[in-house]
Structures are given as C-alpha cells and as structure tokens.
Image (cartoon, rainbow, N blue to C red; front, side):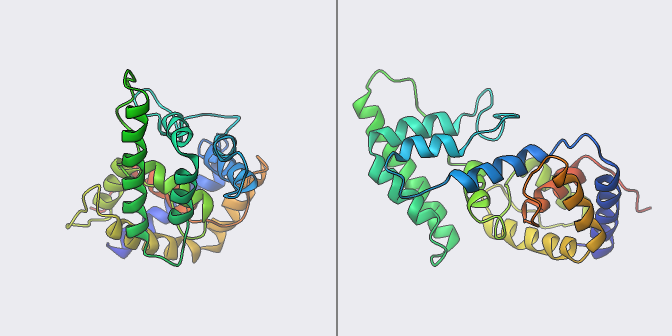
Length: 232
C-alpha cells in the first residue's frame, strides 16, 4: 500500500466529511447503535431478540436486498434449533478464540441448520443461508465489537486497494489480508484528529453513536471506491 496515495485519499475523505450534508452512510452507525442496545445472547426468546437487534428506521439494505436475505433466512433457521443457533453466535463472539476459525465454524453451523430446516420442510424453496460470503458475518462482528472489526463489502474494498496501488490483490475469501489491510487504514485514519472530529460532528447530527469505531474504515473505503485522484 503506497502511503502517499493512502494519505491523499484520507485528505479527500476528510474534506468530504467536513462538507457532507447528505449523511448517506449514517444508517450503518444508527443500526450498530440499535444492535448494541438490543443484543442479549441470554435472551429467553433468542429468535425475537435476533430479529429486534437487526432493525433500522432508515433501510433494510444491510440484511435484505433483492437476491440476498440473510436475516430473513436466519430467523427461519434459528426456529429449527434455537439453542444450536444460540451456541453458534456465542462461539462467533468468543474473542478468546481465533477469528477465522470462529467464522469457519459459524458457516458450518449455518449449513447444518439449513440441512435440518430442509428435512423439516421438504417443500421449502429455501436453499441458501446467505452466510457464506463473509458479508453478514462481518456485520454481526462489527456490530458486536465495533472497535475490532469493520464491514466486508468486497467490490469497493478491492477497488480501493487498486487505487492504493496494491499489486498482490486478495480474493474475496482471504479474510486475513482484509483484516491486515483494514488495520493499516484504521491506523492512519485514527491519527487525523481533524478527520475524527468531523466524523463525530456529523454523527451527532443524527444522534448516532459518536464514539470512534472501525466502521469508519468502511465509510472510508466506500468513499475511495467512488472517488478518483490523479497521481500523474
């Protein structure tokens, strides 16, 4: 990652934060704040708690789009074996264990629940749990531990890496590279106090959580993917 390019994009991002009035990315921060208030792994009605945790007054795009509906399907799968599902999330959120192992085991659990669901509902058209591409799993982790993780949206992330002149580009399943590269981005972002103050100010306009989080990294690489700087 070329530092001069990263710093140039951070400068452009800071200007954007200082001037932006559309607040187009704030729905993520509001949804995270809501999740933090509602999540309870010990909830007697775990399915209802999961459903309530992933709610937004603004949009459902984080967990439901035209051909992608992980929340909807997860609710059906959890009803198949709620205690198995609770253990899956407990394991996923166990920070004492290796992160990639946790994610792999969570995906395995989703597949187990899906097969059980299909046995119980032989006429179902549900044939995908939508948790195999890392996107919704990284959302769970980011919402639960916002200081540790950030959203995984691969196409704009990859486009950002190209603009940072990274030659050895990762594939969509290389989470180790994703963690390392987003950590570098976060380190540089956190060094810019003017940028952090601009973010705090715009967050407060919507009463979102104004604490600094690695969700800022997602805001940053989404911005970079759609902004061009000439280095000629």
